Length: 111
Image 1: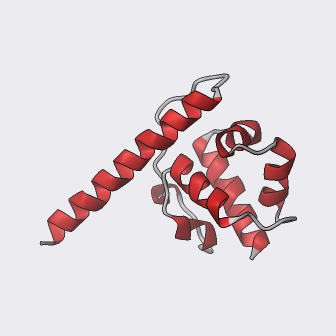
Image 2: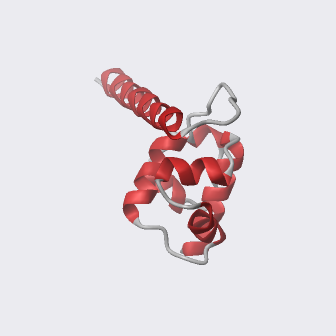
Image 3: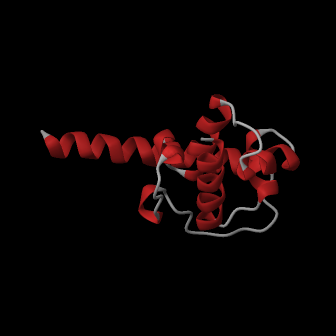
């Protein structure tokens, strides 16, 4: 399971055009720890998976899927060099708002 989650972390990070350093900064861990999760060497704790899901703009279950695709995440439409921790936290907050909006829109459409 660690390998599957790690492969998905790496794929989603690549699609999102973030570096390992940026993800680690957003999660509040060091890059080597994140690298261990991405390689499947260590199991990523649930609280960090939840934060990563918020950063990538995806649902938690996506990390456990066999075939992850671009349409399963909220792509970031910009690329800024040298993101700091506050920038990353704002991205997480914004994507959380967008995910909530999409869920509400789907609920309303199903009524």
